Length: 466
Image (cartoon, rainbow, N blue to C red; front, side):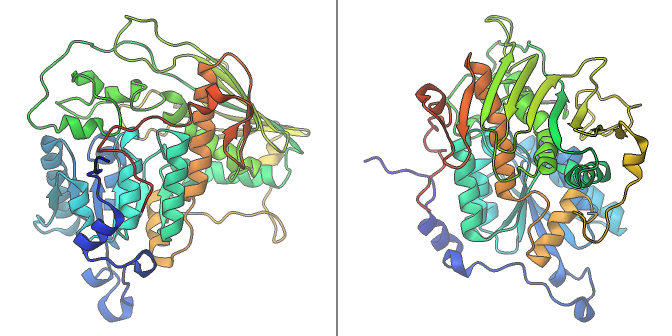
């Protein structure tokens, strides 16, 4: 049998001198009374894996705000972006600390970053198809992980990731940052406490991507390790709009290629679906019936081939029906919860993660209800309550110290991502699908079950024999 060159658990532990899984140690935190709250010995050292648009505009800036953490290493397969990332971090710390700062390591191989014992945690901001292996490798290296959404490229891969995180006891946060926004927390409290009566339906409204994209084959830039960038997915020729811009940090083309992700359903809808699961108290399960209709680009219309306009429907074990629909003038971006005694609408408002995100409605109210009195209610001691939390990355860092579960743990991430991927599978099949959320397979549907995983390209496949 041909030997797999992916590093094995035994080999990794040997090269990095880390003991067995049970011997992994949380970052050592020295009492602030001894060294001061922000002394180097009391600081969480962070490695940033993937230094593109979402990292530069969102993940790294959020970590830079934390006084008890320090980005000490950056890693990217594009050496141009790697140099930019180091410059970005150094300039920010120079400004923040008031003294020249240059102490940032660079890596073009994340496995080498993981071998650095001085790095406590990693933030993974890679494209969707590059989420699984780095996360699993990181937790077996003893690192806590913040991972951009979605959790995985497929449902089967998501189960592998969740199992790996849970088996190692690492602190994992999924990048569905709406959970840290007050309007969504308040909405969940109101719904879980019955302020609109028995919840009956949820309508999620989000936009989708157009067709297009330049298909002309181009030379691979010398600064990009394109084979590693393709990772587990099949080899295809290079063209810039399949990957990311070589100049600037605009919205990358891979977001609109099915080879690397499922389009808006996992790129945008996932944020609202995560809140829906939270409000429905369905975070650790999934739908039992799914159907969908979607438009896909016609052959020859360009490089981008993810779904366009869509409508999906799902029924959950508690009887709640959820629909996901395209944003229109009379259906603005957000979630509409309808119960037996009223409705509640909650939205992003003017929030954008990055400057190149699709436009949102800036004048939109973030929280509305059928009766304004619903919004004035406050939970009492015996009611369901959620603690107000800091920004999502800061919540993760706090949990790295406390070893408590963060807002969006790995199993919640898996179930949310799975619900999105189930809708994507339903877009491909012209029938209602019946899902078993316990066994995680479709009932009596071999064709649908065949879409729960894909063949991963050697040697970038995710190995399960850790």
